[in-house]
Length: 209
Image 1 (spheres, one colour):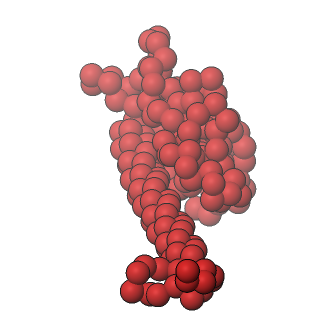
Image 2 (cartoon, rainbow, N blue to C red):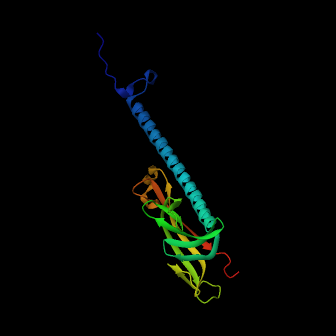
Image 3 (cartoon, one colour):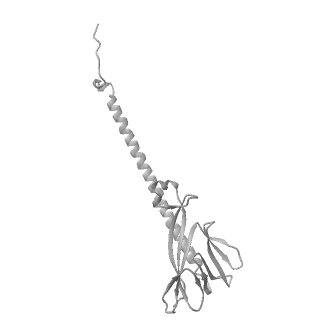
């Protein structure tokens, strides 16, 4: 009879396969590689979503500013009649006549509304979270803005030179960006909308010209 020989696992011949230690190390290395690949993919995907959202925000801001400036450029008569922090009334041409148009922010439907005198409210610009207006007036007729007011009423005592428009717009975005931290964005709780500001100055035509 031949004596029984004990062989340890570490003594196994590499020609016959891998040792348990090598298998454990290989599995661990593969796992680390998969984690790194997955993390890189998620970061790439989040960066892509972020870039898309920023482009959408920029395009939306440019479009909204162009819409407002174009719509308000066709004034006539008394020009701007009155305004508050969230409303403005001005005279615009309509079918050859000078008509009053009222603009306001609707907080419930999140849009700007436009109403021709005697008509109904219609949506002017969609996805608007808020609107703030400031009226730059000239009190002593020296063609310089003396004061920025939160309200305005047309009169012979003051001249309105500029209107500063502050808007908060809502851009559709992926909820995956929330993982980047809520401090990077201002989200609407009721949906996946990113809130972002846009500000511009509307200079009234033919003032001190």
